[in-house]
Length: 143
Image 1 (cartoon, helix red, strand yellow):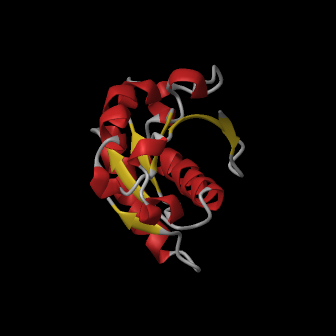
Image 2 (cartoon, rainbow, N blue to C red):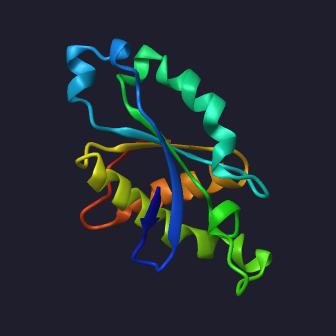
């Protein structure tokens, strides 16, 4: 699914939802999500196997798993921008803050758990730090 961000980027996202048998009365009410960010040179679908395993983890309370192509990667790749420009944290951070807001709005603002590998981990940590400084803070629950 493409999510249009206020930064002008259309971000391809992939959503995995827990199977009904893993939902409990508490998790049926849960509307948080885990946002997984890939490393440099990779794509959002690298999280597919991890997402399926995370969905079976009862500690996550039946939350959705979401991954997204970072700017300059996968289907978020544009010919007018060099890869060096796309990989700058200052370039990726506004996209991720906008994505956190869009996803948290979609899951009714309950909060996001951010995780990432390599570049995605750096973006997740910095986005969490900046999200919590915003007024009002974006609902990031963990990194």
